[in-house]
Picture 1 (tube, one colour):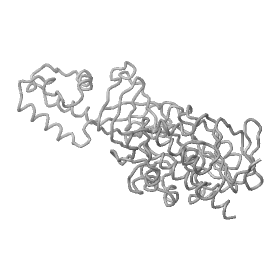
Picture 2: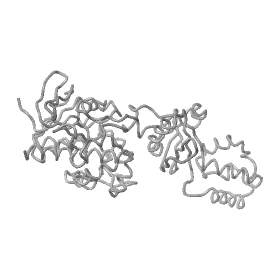
Picture 3: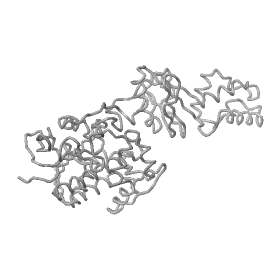
Picture 4: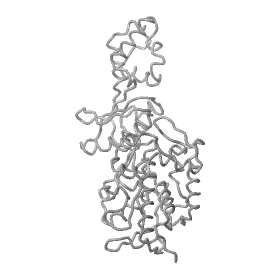
Length: 423
């Protein structure tokens, strides 16, 4: 029976990159995955276009990884976002940069990224076993000993890289398998929670689906604590859904909602939408008065055409009981001010998020305090490495999590190979 220098469990972005790095650095590698095909989460990432990384500077990149981003300084010193870009371009995938530094393949096809990675894995002679579920990892007192499969088969090895992902998007295979193996080795698994997940609300207008499907562009979304202090503000787009709010700005705020509900032991948390983040209330108010001056006879409704999305405005008019057919000149300053205030501070009480299974990313995981950042090696057992979302590291959507996965995967694969090959 062939023994392998390195066994990698999990064929997602971090596992594939770990396989490539380990094989490139001279190790014989076995990659096992319980699913029938590799790279399933990668194939659906970025809306099927695969946001392979983000081209921001390292400091800015780390600022977009709110879950223990500082840990990434070391893995980024081994393999960073620019290395990821060079890696893919070196394999013949041309990339393009979009808004906020997001990098996509020019052909907008995630499947190209997956196939290119798989071709590289095969080219390097990595042995792949799909439909192969791992039951556990056996350890000696201080080191890795063997991988035990669900079918009872035992694979002796001195080096294992766990790249099993978190608990989000379970249909791609990430169902939290790696956590018990880490705990068995003496690792701490911090509490898991959903991040980058749609937010839920019990507001009447949400329950009645009044605004369902309405998108708002370039807004600011803020989460407040119960005392009215700002916790976080994110800008971008959002959408009202039948259960609450979603879209990039909402997803970025979601982890703060989860944490605030828990920390303050409260049932709801207030959020605010600012439709005009670049304008102060006073400037907006004066702009409206200037419009009235130019066309005083126009009805309020017609004067405000194009001021904001019509469906949203209709909802606000009703909420404020405004006489929208009245000539604009007859509308009181107080009414204009209240309209401006609600556009700048549209409140929504939220009560949670969808489940971790519905989240794009898992918060929490294997404690990074127990991982050597320069190598991704366990501080508990010799020959044990972790990479990707199984760790307590998470970023916002926009190429940050995949950058973490590729960087930690490459770092783990390279150091595991170097340990074995240079013994």
